[in-house]
Length: 146
Image 1 (tube, helix red, strand yellow):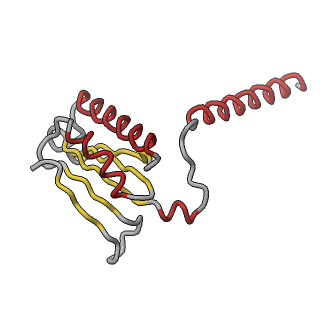
Image 2 (image 1 turned 120 degrees about the vertical axis):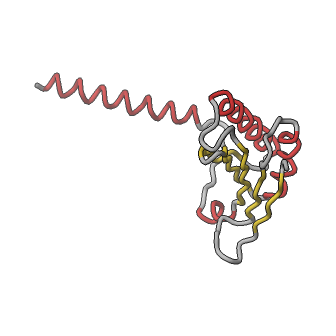
Image 3 (image 1 turned 90 degrees about the horizontal axis):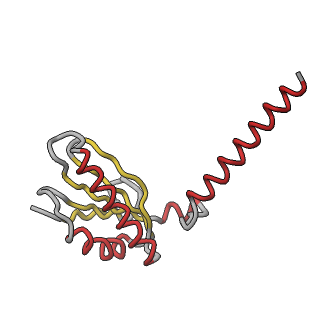
């Protein structure tokens, strides 16, 4: 019984250490926002990229947009201007959320990359100058395609 309990403890400890090591490897090079004040001061750049049809797009299309988000993330990180936050597929759009201290600086970096892509009509980006959604939140919409 003791040997079995010790084996179980050993397995759990190894699994825990492996998870921590994997987490450390995955997060290498990613800047961490340390305080709630820093997180609250981040601005959000939303990309709304039209998909085929009105659902989730094709497999090729989703793969293509995922490679675009990687290129945008690298460009923002290299410039120290921000980072990729998350993406969503649905409702006929791929929505990519980018976070950084200056939404204007982020858009200046990523817009040339987006203009090199073959984008469908009705693609746009939204600059959110704060993470708030109240009536006083400054929001600017920029059409990427017609």
